[in-house]
Length: 110
Image (cartoon, rainbow, N blue to C red; front, side, top):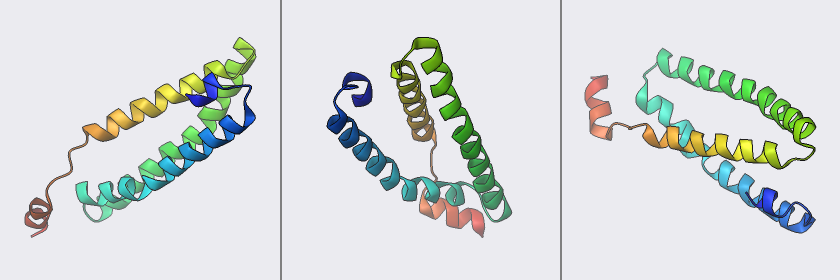
């Protein structure tokens, strides 16, 4: 959101992107701990593979969407707002996942 508001202030943009990257990278460990807790054995491996495949598609769709919206609107504001909306939707989706308690996972494995 900072990138939309402060488009003409380079240092604020750099600071905003740096903070965003630190936040996203700090959550990676927590995120990748979820699939093995929800799935067991080969299903966990398949789930992690599916997550990576979706991420790779996003690596193509995101920049393409930014480019198309930049060409359409003449600036980066629309693309950055679209990515912000997608990140908020992703956060809501992850928050909807209910991870079973540790003792429930142990009971299921036995």
